[in-house]
Image 1 (spheres, rainbow, N blue to C red):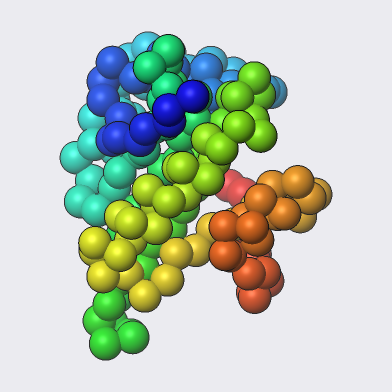
Image 2 (image 1 turned 180 degrees about the horizontal axis):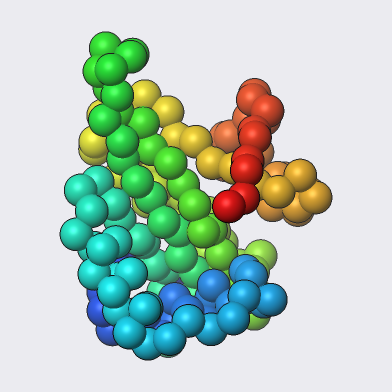
Length: 146
């Protein structure tokens, strides 16, 4: 299998929604107009890239990356990573590693000094994967849902 990555396009919305349904199966499916409005806002946001991984047969995984300007670290930006998901049928085949290679390459191109992500404390397999990608659990995260 030859896995490639690229920035997601409008045509990828159905595949992205299917992946996000795997990530958050209890979320209700949003209305089409809300999906398209959110996608327009995402694609218009400076520094934002939704990456997809594919093998010629369709989208297998995705990750949402945002490069944020910064006034510390010599004004070098940092990247936040969110909504990491590989289709259940494609896990343990290298898709996530290829996606994270693309994430790190994107962060380096933007001169980021770090890439940061949060993961629920109960996702042990995901944490093992992130550590295998060179990430370290060096901070305690806090979250307040609204």
